[in-house]
Image (cartoon, rainbow, N blue to C red; front, side, top):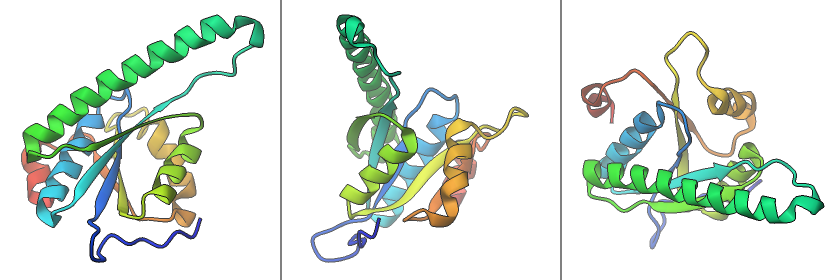
Length: 164
């Protein structure tokens, strides 16, 4: 992946990518990204990844129903996150729904949008670890095409305001 970032060229603006998932801390990433967008005059791209197990062909009808339900749930999650971002920063984030392997989908979204400058994730503050996505991305961090920002999941709005 060698796509050159163009975020600060004429006609472009920097964007951060936020993953909207089912973790309790997704709101911290959305809050940080929205505040960041205000500060830099940028935008936010919200990505929801649908992971559907390989479906057996004989169950194709069931697979289609599962996919439709997953897309509906993804749109509901993005509605909540977009509403939150709009309430924080009066912005309307871009929304992307992808299906498949999370790392592959994240990298593909970054590759296809030359204005994305950073990936914002939030880490679970609990003893069980930072969360599956943070763990997965951290393994690839050394070769990631853009900087990563990991927001501690227990930061308050005031704490994030002071940082962003």
